[in-house]
Image (tube, rainbow, N blue to C red; front, top):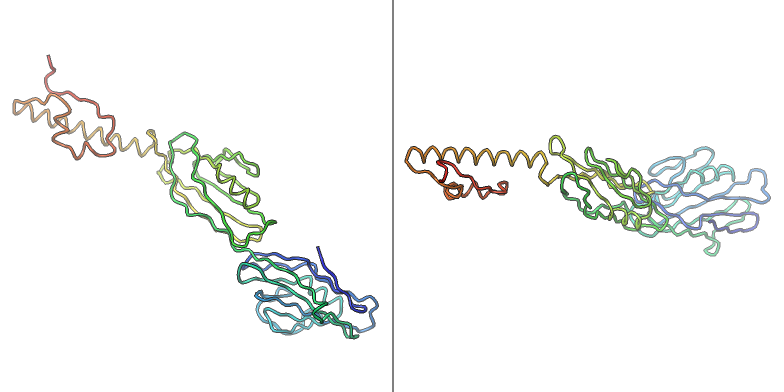
Length: 318
């Protein structure tokens, strides 16, 4: 929506509201100057101001004073810019107007215009004020490694996204990918469910709901170094950047688990064989696995030794 003010033959139009992302060079649309009954050679001067932003036209950066495309650019840049020229030239400059807010929160844009025939909107009553909202970059909650049983669908911890100055009209995109693990999320606004790459789209509230229903089917990656990558981008172009999360398959059957179990079994077998030999040489024959346990408590209490079956060696009991 727009707002309009007139004085004599001069009419000025400005945006009703404006919104942008912090640190983003954002276009400011809907500024327009018109003269009902122009005279030959008539010029206008438009002064646009803001409190904290950086105003530019024609893609210029920093402070600039000079003539570009028929418009004289002056003023106390960067928070104020003055454009002087024909109605056509000034409107062409306004079509390229951008602003870059330095911090999140509320700001204002305002415009005063006068023409060379004495019409103006310079009074406080005729100044057009545009409330401006600036949203910060999205923030993804702390991400640690996650784990789950190999081959089983597992609900992941709820990642959260927040943003200072988030707007009701703002939209977010979350991309989640993994080299090996299938990802599942059946919520509205999610594409790619059941594959290794998901895209979540919607308002911040919708994204929060989608992330609460994110599942993974953990697999045994070849090198045991599977990772999931998450990136959040808002509709202003600000992003969290890619974040990686280590994915660990924890249930028996994983390559790492199988290797650990094999080492444990082989160690017990070697120890049992050695004990049997010692018993034979000394004339003593340990009768059960419990004898080995007494002689090697440190090894047998290791976390990777499980399902401790009873072994018997030496002479069979009669």
